[in-house]
Length: 247
Image (tube, rainbow, N blue to C red; front, side, top):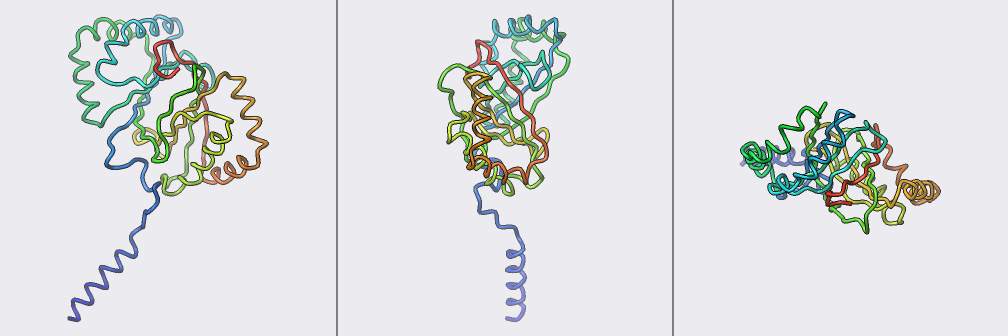
């Protein structure tokens, strides 16, 4: 009996020491949901930018036959110019593996787009990200422009900074200063990274909304709370291409 009680006390002690992650921000994504997004960036040779984009436009149907294209943009400012940025959606990692295996065997895709354009690319980057539990992929009200805001948060994950970050984003969105399209947490790539995709009618409307938000006490209070968890912030202004689903 003494041994039984001693064992029970040890088990309860271990349970008490274990972190209790009851918040919906305990993880960057829901474990039962394997769906994720791949953020791809291609840095192109300046003289080949137009040709690369035109070639993709002519052959985009060959690529979207395998997986869903969310959006395709040119970086206007805030990042390296002569850069295209695109987002792809996958059901899970097995789905992505199947897609890339199929593309490797697709002679039409290889001959019409991949092989002719390889020499146009200086550098490529890929990141895997999940939508945060409180975010969903939205559609813009009409055609416009996009802003990709990148936040490098302090280590600890959404369990640490999720609540404050959600309040800061929603303070801007709910009060009409910006339209949020999706909020993502990087899984592969630079860790502790959050990416927020915004829609704006124009660069000038974005600027006007930002200035108004700086004078709003509710936004200022929410942002002031979230910056306690923030290390670095960067933003890029993006122009959607004609074949981009998000326009």
